[in-house]
Image (cartoon, rainbow, N blue to C red; front, side, top):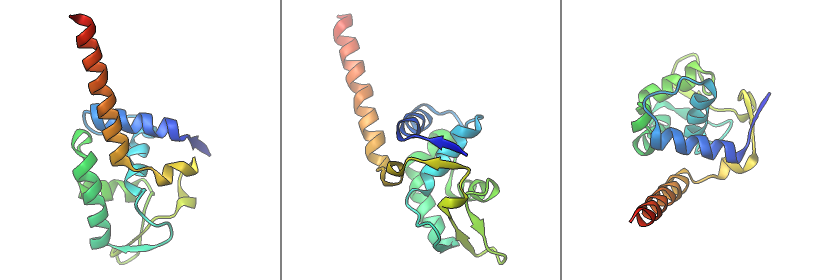
Length: 136
């Protein structure tokens, strides 16, 4: 089973969200996006479609623009890629950490993705400022 470290996860997530141009082609990058959408879900809990949509809508509103993922396409992708299981009636969804195709550093599960992106944006602005200062 493949391992994703916290540093790898955050670096790729930042790049995908801030510089992405549509759904990534590389499977690992797509999976990092999918995993990031699951961070707020409780493993083993069954979610109704409404509950799941609410959670995924929050993610897509914050991070989905550059990768072209709204909450509906995200939910579909999570089911198609086996990150979420849908019950036979199609009304309940369950996420189980143990079914993931990766092992993740435990610190990933407690990441605040909004803070990760905000910090990355601040670093980018600081680099731009320093570059402009050096160019004058």
